[in-house]
Length: 332
Image (cartoon, rainbow, N blue to C red; front, side, top):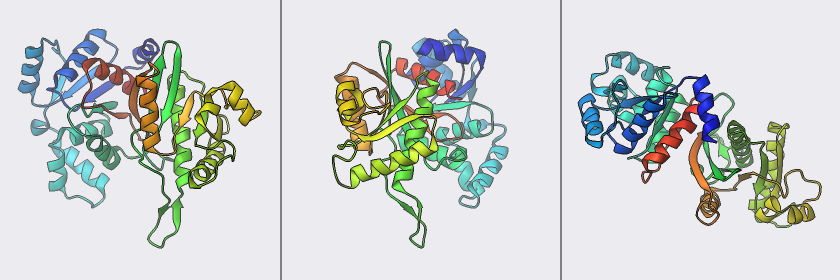
């Protein structure tokens, strides 16, 4: 998988911003990418502190760009841009204060076209990565929410799972008058379509199973109803993608069970892309595959944004940073 992504990056040079430039794991990855020559890291932090941390760890970052928000010579321009983006929600003083923080500063570098992608979260929360992305980079035209997926790899086998990290549940969005402006089913359908797009980036031919405790009407309740409605919407949104549901996991992966319970389905029994009805089952599901199934899990990969911005686990190691750097930049 990574060989293919590296070839993409060799043909399409990219810059990736690391928001935690003094972190040893970030520096190890940056040094490795520098040596590889197919992706250019940009480190955010105090220049002397970053260089000292690299020297302490024995990481060669000579020649890499290091940008300190406190001494950035285009800060006035950056503040002006952010004020316009926030449309009166924050003053120039408030924007300047936020841009002293590496997560906001790095996101603005992407927004202003000075970098193509961002990777953060080695020392702070997912919310601290997603919030500036939503406020500054914002969602792509046609996207109504940010979601996430994981790519799972075991040998030559590759799976996609969403959403396992961002959307806790799906509830109807209503305006001040109580009118539904975006239904729960529309949101779940969008997650399915976005996850299928991510799967394609990794060379997969997505066969999308909309998961439930029910298969084709066998179970009753609001959960299966939501998945059933979302499946119909997702099929309309992406008629060229094989999407089916609602179905139980055994029907999704076992041809015998799938075709017995869901005869004629192109997905049942052959699914490689799994959409969970809420975050709890999604998070449990991908971790079962990882820990008991022996799959390597890559993600969360954020979906629906105008630019690739991804979040690291605070428990990550340098190898995970390196891998997520390649994945994030390839999405650009």
